[in-house]
Structures are given as structure tokens and as C-alpha cells.
Amino acid sequence: MDQNLQDNSHLRTILDSVADGIFTVDQNFNIKSFNRAAERITGISREEALGRKCHDVFHANICQGNCALKHTIDTGQEIIDLHINVLNYNGEQVPVSISTAVLTDQKGGLIGGVETFRDLSVIEELRKELSGQYSFQDIISKNHTMQETFSILPDIADSDATVLIEGPSGSGKELLTRAIHSLSPRNSKPFVAVNCGALPDTLLESELFGYVRGAFTDAKKDKPGRFALAEKGTIFLDEIGELSPAFQVKLLRVLQEREYVPLGATTPVKTDVRVIAATNCNLLEMVRQNTFRHDLYYRLNILKLRLPSLAERREDIPLLIEHFLHKFNLKKDKKITQVSDEVLQFLLRYSFPGNIRELENLLEHAFILCRLNKIEIEHLPKEVLQVNSENFSEYQTPMDQTLQQTEVELITKTLKQFLGNRGKTAQALGIDKSTLWRKMKRFGILNDNF
Image (tube, rainbow, N blue to C red):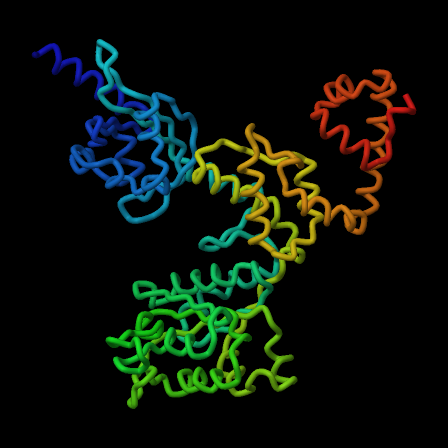
């Protein structure tokens, strides 16, 4: 017994001398050991952690659906150097790199798991500084227009004024709205989003303002609307330009009088909700054309923000690619670390009519088809490649044309060296055979010449 205590003491001393956080769990994920580095990184003492479920201590962004330690205990497969975020004692996100392994007894029987985690906070800050990456809340951009927006966002959030956000579909208007809400004094209250273009007037009125019992045939009891659900918080009215003239009048009353009348009611209800509206239309032009009320426009336009299209902020594409790859790796339990140079060049030139949402969808499509650790051009949707190939040349700069000419010469020279053998040529160039064939077709290089 004394020997076991001595061994445990020695083991604890060894674990406490390690710079990485280390904890172990039993098969029910109860924490059995917790070293000093784990205390430092999480801000939680060993005494507080022992005996608790690991997800109650770490609150990591993979705890609910993609727990790495559970995967290792269930399958026996170790996970090495997975980058995730955990919450420390103060509720702050801490970037860490984790590795997991199973714990067995002397007979090889499973008794639990061990996880090590390294604090990447300093490395992450250096990486952001060196790469020029900028982020605000969940918004990533180093575009100068976006940076200007970031700089005034805390002031906008601190006020209670109505905000109008203009920008093309898929550019991140709701994400920006959520950032304003989370920075505002109302952040502990509800955030409610409504797509005004998705419902006809009658349904939109009951959706926003609710109804009372007997308002229509199936109204068996009172139902609160979105304004009631967002009380003391923020309501996001997306596609505000789709409102009919009749409903514009009703929304104007809410903004002017801070009250509304539920469907079927006779008395107004006071509301304390911050309104943030968004549109992909030019509302001022709609005012000039008498399709949008000028008084409602000026009520909405107290503070206006404009989000540029992704085509206007192409410098953000590499940052967004990195962000989405990290997101999908966590979501789909893969380790795809990069896109090929050909994919990157394609995405940098693509027009992106669907903006950031389209980029995310393209990468998710490629992510599903990719079986290795690098996304290649063949993993992108064929229809996007076909449509964009017609306009590909218009995005080429003189530098692009020089690089293309150099690439043609290199491929031609290598093909001649191997007497037109595409397999040996592709191997010498360090690319896939299918990629070589696509380049040959695109550049008009024919095997008959060799």
C-alpha cells in the first residue's frame, strides 16, 4: 500500500512538471487526474476538476457532437494535434492542441482515456500578426472597408439606435447583426431573426406581432410574436426591401411609437426591442421609385453599414478558406489541411455571385469528396468549373499570363523529355495525372506533338 502511494506521488510529480495540460478519465468520462498545467490553462483547480465530467470542465467546441476522447475510447484510434477551443474559468476561449490515447490495465483491459492539451494562445496571436489575419467576433477580414466597420462596431453596439445593413446575399449580414447584439448591453436578452421576404403579409403580421385567441378560425389561444419573444433584446429583420407598402406602414408605427397591435387585438402593446434591418436592395433607389416609403427608410437609416461582396474583398479568400477548413475538420472529423495551388487560384478568380455563403458551400462540397489531406480542383462542383471557365480569362493579369506561359513551357519540355508519357511527366512535375491532362487540354497541348 505504501509503495502504491509512493508511486502515485512520483507520477503526480512527473505530470506536474510537464508544460502541457494532462488529464485522465475513466470509462464514464469522470476526471481521475488533472495536472498543474491543466490548472493553469483552464483556471480550474485540481480539487474542482476531479470527479467531474470532462465536458463540464472544458466546454470545448467539440464536446457535444465530436468529442475526440470519446472517439479514441470507442475506437482505440489515437488523435494527434487536433486544434480546438476550450473555455477557461472566466469564460474566455483558449485555443489548444489536443492529443488523445486509451488507458489500459496490466492485462490490456480498457480503463479510460488520457488527453494532453497545449495552450496555443501565444502562437495564435503571433500567427494572426504574421499573417495579417484580422477577426471581429466571428467575422474574418483584413479588407480595409471591413476593418473600418470593425472599428466603429463597438460604438454602434453601445447605442440603441436602429441599424440598416446593406449588402449582397451571402455577404454575412446576419453574422454582423449577431456581433452587434453580442457587444451590446442587450446581449443577455434574446436575439430573434426574421426573414421578411419569406412570408406573405398576413402570415408576417402574425409572425412578428402575434395574435390573440379568436383572431382567426384556428387561433385557440394567444400566441406571442417575434417582437414579444425579443423583448429587451434584438430583432433582426432580414430582406426588409421585400415588405409590401401596406406592411411598411405597420412597421413604421413600431419604430415611431414603440408599440404594435397583435392580430385580432384592439389595444396596442408596448415594446422595448432594438431593431436591426438588412437588405440586398438599394433602398434609397427604391424610395426614388416610390416602392419603399421614404419615412420608413429614414427611420431605419439612423445608422447604416455596408458589407462589400466577396469579389470586392478577394484578399480575404485565403483567410476564409482556412477558417472553413478548420470548421469542417471539427464538424466532419477529418484532417484536410489545405487546398491545392490550382484550387486557390481558381477561387481567387471566381466571381462568387453567392459571396461568402457560396464559398462555404463550395468548400463543403469539396470536403465531402476529398479523401486525402488536400482539396484538388476535381473536388469542386463541375457546374461551377464549367460556368466559370468561360470567364476565366477575364480575371487574368499580365503576371498571370506570364506564369501561364512559364507553366506551358515547363509542361511541354517535360512531356518531350518523357516522349509524351503523361504518367512519367505528371510524376516529374509533382502533380496528379488527371491534373496534368486538364492543364494540357486547357493550354491546347496535344500528345501528337511528342
